[in-house]
Length: 416
Image (cartoon, rainbow, N blue to C red):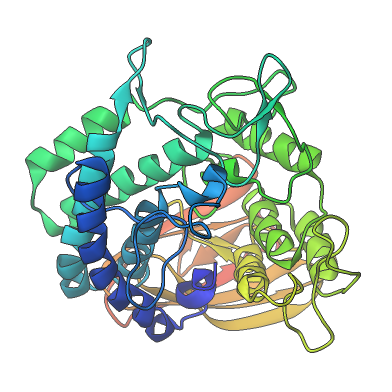
């Protein structure tokens, strides 16, 4: 969470310490994968340190398996390697990062097993940090193919496939990943229309738990979206409605990102107000921010500060679906505004102004050659080209050269 805003706020250099540290973690992680699991590749668990600790942790064996034995840390961290390339289009960096990403994928290939339906699943599997009730009403943590596991693996495989395509190498491995990805245990909906957290419709021990791990595919992943998976987009919204807005600071921070990805700026703004208001950090109705602006997860956890910053950025600009979506979740409270220097995937820098809750102008500068696909809920034009209507939005693709500037102007009368 601490690095979520690094690329989108155009601070890629602040991302580098994490990305460089991952090289060492993958080395210790390879030893853990081999010695603990007899698997290829590398793995990391719940937390690490400056020495690259990769093995399961938990207070000398007293850690709850729901988090202590969670083995998706390496896969999740690999997302940061891909994201740095996605925002910068630095091929040299991707060449160096690709082997780390590939080795993480190799661990997952060894870890996955086929279930009776022919799907690839993780087993054992947990959903940090929530639990469910078994048939006898007892609280349980360990299951099969929890949604967070499967979403992280889907994300990793997708990123490695696209990295292989960008580098024009390793086609056989790319094809292997694509073949497994299509048979990963799929997303499912529960009886009440929510996104299932586990592979069956288990009853949660805490329906309002501050962790909503199974929405990884909505954010920071890109598996769930309004345009590509409308059914699960609605299910993700239902999940957040059931979970509620309470939580510690970091939980509210992540919820801002989720509501932004759900294109609901007013709900995201409501959570921003809660995040900035300290009302006691009890893990439920409390949380927020201390008077000194530290995130209130006692005694202090900076995750909420950075996740909240990333969420505010997501409200103004999104690019995870291969297009630049301008003001996707602008709240009604932000009627007038201006933002400069935000970064979009594809290597684009974006400046925007808006008035009366609508885009008034925008400028996009390309850091490399490529196609810039622009989306806005207001009709617009670039030079003589007019955006075409796509559902509730307007979309236009512009071919750009490195260093070129693209000026976006709204159409005052779209029907003209």
